[in-house]
Image (cartoon, rainbow, N blue to C red; front, side):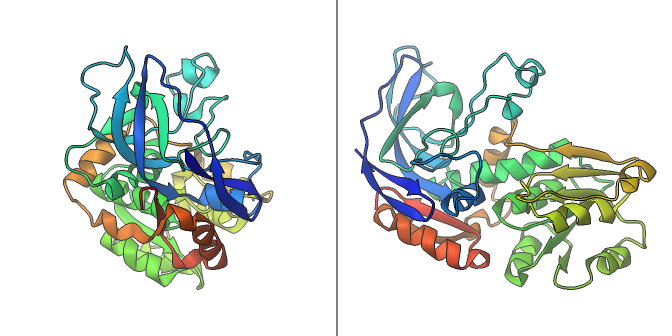
Length: 338
């Protein structure tokens, strides 16, 4: 069957691969849409230390179950429309033993450490599929990245008493904005792109900050010089990491999603004087059903996050266009069946 592969940095092309082999606990999925993630762009640019080449990308997945293994429970049925949890877990490392398999030491995410779903079909364990009777395949392809942002708000223990600064309003950042808003928090969104700030307002932000301007001055003005109670970093740059530490209030919480590609220097006195809680947030943990329910209720215009859809045969063009103008896109989908 056909798939698309990152053959080397900057080079994407079609490949022929074997049909998936179905294990007794596996389901076979006809892929409909695959979303491209910032980690895919980093791999395309040769900037991801987790990716080796050649690699089939794709971990934001939607499709239809077309076959089930002999030991798959009846509630997982042929014809269900599903999204896929793309993570793996060893079950033995400290994170797994602590009930946090999302940050398993030996995790291999589809399309990153192992070949992904940018192909006609994929076989996965039935425990990794989550279905919806009402969401479209386009909406199901949004569930995983939105869940990463949702998980970050859980890591921050966001509640209705909080003022939350979300730095970076891509799809993952928007997931954090929407989740923090539905938890009752006041949400301030920060981004360099004015169009993304306009999107953040539609997804629950009450104020926005353009990071072209004096950011700290704007934060001080919005918080009576106190700072925010929670800062969520969803960019992965040294300056945004530093902004998160500076903008948060005394006794505040900082949650980091983005991978910075350069070393980051901090004024560590901020950590101590403010007695900050600083937490990483990796992947998503037990939130896929909640995010699916959020989309099913139509709480926000989630399909509007999709900037453009390319057919599978134009995957190389999708990467090239995104690489040339990353700020112009929120979410790119690949239509595998087009």
